[in-house]
Length: 230
Image (cartoon, rainbow, N blue to C red; front, side, top):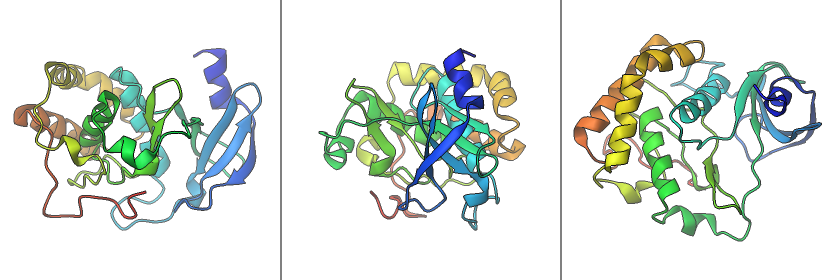
C-alpha cells in the first residue's frame, strides 16, 4: 500500500458536509494530505427489506476490490475503516466534469459506459442512476454508490440499457473467462465482505453472462430502472 493509499485507510477524517439528497448518511470529509472523501458510516444506513442490515458499506468495498482486481478501475478507491461516526465505507472523492450533461452522456455509447454496464450485470447492481456515473475532465469515467449490489436474486436496475442484447466483444468475454479462472482468488478477496451465497451467485451470473454472449435485456419481473433515475 502506498503512503497516499494508507492515508485513505488511516488518516483522520474531518467531516465538512452532509449530502442531504442521499437516502443513507453520506458525509463529505477531508483527510489531510489525501484530499476529499465520501464517508458512509454503517450507523447511518437505512434498513432495507431485501438486504441484510449493516452490510451496505461492505458491498461498497467489495465493488471496488472486484473492479480493481479485474483491471477495470471503474470504482474510486474505497476502504472499510473507522471514522468519526464509527465503521463505514470511505471512498476517494471524484471531481466530475461539470460541463457534461450527465443524462445525455450516460445514454451514449462510450466504451467506459459499456464497461460500467457489464460490471453492473456482474455485481447485480440494483441502483445505477445517472448521478452515480462520474465523468472527469481527464476523460476517465467512474461509477459510485454500490451499496445495494451482489444480491443473490436477479435485481439489475440501471439507466444504461442502451447496450441491451448487444453481443459481447472478445475482450469482454476474455474478462469474464479471467474472472472465472481466478474464482478462488476473488472469493478469498471478498469473503470477509460478502456471504458464501452471494459469492456463489456472483460467479453464476458471470457464467450465465458468458453463455448468453450478450448484454441482458430489461426484465419483466422487476422494475428495470431505479427511481428516481437521477
